[in-house]
Length: 223
Image (cartoon, one colour):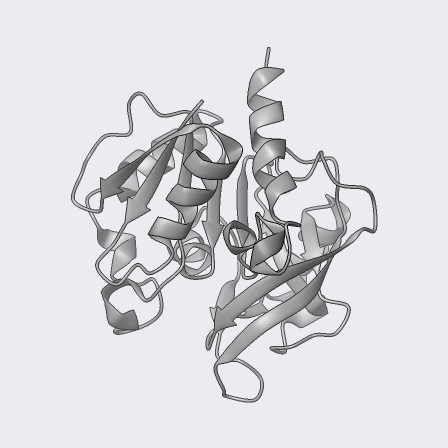
C-alpha cells in the first residue's frame, strides 16, 4: 500500500506522517507537493497538520485552491481513504469533502498536549482495529480546532453514525464534543487530534498506530 503525504507551504506534520507510515506501519509513502496535479499510483492520501500558507485569510482557505485539490477530490470519489489531521481536517471542510467548519478554540488560546478521545464508531475503515467506546490518548496542537456545524448537519452526522471520535473532556469547545468525523461514504476522515504523533510508546502513547493499521486492513480486505 502506498500513501501520498500532501505538503503545503507551512505544513509541519508532514514528516510525522511520513515517519509513521514508513518507519512504524511499514508501508510506502511519498511526499506530494501542493502544486502537483495527479495522485495516480497512490492508494491513500494523508493531509497533515500545520499552518498551510500561514493560515492567512482562514485556516485551510488558501490550501483549498491549490493545484493538488482536484486530484484529492478525485481520489475521494474513487473510494480511496483520505485522512486529514489538524490543518488537514480544516482543508477537508474548506474543499467540501467534509461538512462543517473549524473555528477558534473556545478560550481563544492555542492548545498543545495529550487529550482523551473516545472511539464512537469502530466500524469505519479508519477505526476497525479499535474497540467500541475505547478511550485513546492522542496529542493535539491547534488554535482553531473547535468543530461547528448547523443542526441539520449534526442530525445527519448523528443519524448515520459519522461522528467517529469525541472528547470526554472537551478542550476546545467543539459542538457535541466532536473530535473527528467521516463523510457519507466513510472513506474521508477529518480529526483534530494527531494519531501520527502517537504511534510508539516512547512518544507517550501508541494509540494512534491502530488507526493506520485500520487503513491497511481495509485496503487488504477490499473486494
